[in-house]
Amino acid sequence: MSDLLLQKLFEKSDLADDEFTQLIESDFFDEQLRQLADKARRSYYGTDVYIRGLIEISNYCRNDCFYCGIRRNNYHVERYRLTRNDILNCCETGYKLGYRTFVLQGGEDKFYNDDMICEIVSTIRKLYADCAITLSLGEKSYQSYKAFFDSGANRYLLRHETADTEHYVKLHPSEMKIDNRKKCLFDLKQIGYQVGSGFIVGSPYQTTQNLIADLRFLQQLQPAMIGIGPFIAHHQTPFQNFKNGELKLTLRLISILRLLFPYALIPATTALGTIDPLGRELGILAGANVIMPNLSPVTVRKKYELYDNKICTGEEAAECRHCLNRRITSIGYNIVTHIGNVKECKQQLIK
Image 1 (tube, one colour):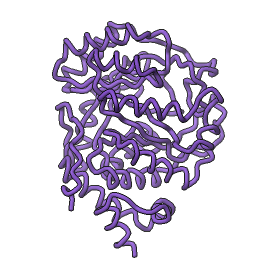
Image 2 (cartoon, one colour):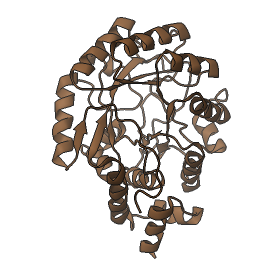
Image 3 (cartoon, one colour):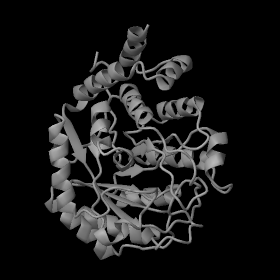
């Protein structure tokens, strides 16, 4: 029965809800699932692992998400903003180390208006024409997204966090709406971005049906990138006493996502490395093919604390880059420095 179920997922890139429930709720399938996910990933990307240089531009945020350490109402956070020159210096450092994608991520900070973002993006585009520019700045209007795109941004990351409306309400304040977040994602696709979404694994009140709803939403969206990570509590949020998400379940879902979306770019997240010292390596082995080291100045890294005990807050960029290269090579994969665009989806490729 297990062979038939996994073969169906491998060949059809889909299952019925009750079949997904079997996979998600049991560790019986994990090793076969991992092997098939690895086969699917290798058919598109071989052993290549892409690196993205993460630049955390601000920890100010207008939102008050209940799980997030930089939420608006956490008055214990030491806030910061990077200047234009700070950001460009991070890009210069990253480019010299071989990064060909820069990810500008931050809270929803109104300080950076559209003109400022467009000017920063257009400058990076002029200086580094051979690089991808990814933004992860939250919910914006269609017009703002279009302006960023026209300035030179070509990827956008916006995790939906949970696709189920009732669950979304339990994780967010009343002014935040899942329908608007979903609209933003489809707006981004319409404009022409390579779009990334994803969800939290093991977030408070989450059920298996919530996870299946996440998979179904991603099937509708067909994103280029899918980022998932385990819930990790932050001690200055309403969820401080909730149990962290599980490594095993997160790895299982990475493998499922690889088989659902064999062409996708899937990161082994920092959160994985936070809950287990080998978490990122295990993520790669489960089907991920992206790592996002931090290019932010060391002086601000600890201040961008979405969850407790975040790793790599004290490493210099070069130190982090060389360490990751050794670690990824040790498990049989290799970090590549080119731009790493998403592969075209070809359903027949892995059969």
